[in-house]
Image 1 (cartoon, rainbow, N blue to C red):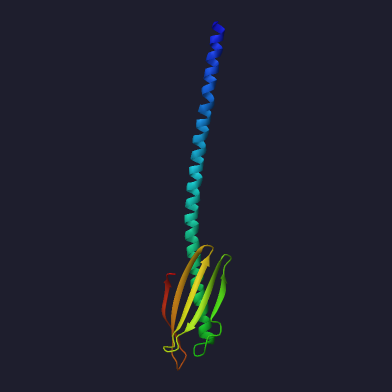
Image 2: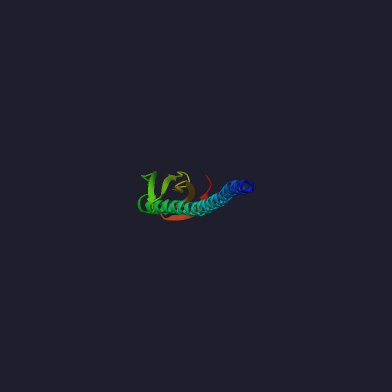
Length: 145
């Protein structure tokens, strides 16, 4: 009878091992998952900030390109490409539109830079002297959508 009591004790201690092992595995898995989620959120935040900067720079590049086109081709006449797209780098682009206010002679340039999901918009207002064709930047700012 004494021999059977020892077997029963061994079976009982083995029965506790499995739940303890599963509990430890669950805790380690939970910690790994929490670390993965935290790392992913941090990476998305930093990557999103980088994309926003790239979109802003793409919008600025679109404005600068449009200013050069205005100076070269249309200070006193109509600007032939009123809107166009500009590729800036491998993952950024800019959509530029040029319009002229007939009364004041000012030229307004709107540029929307985009980089994946981020978008930024810049606006430039150019003053044009109607007699000499001299172009001056009156305003250059980032505007909200």
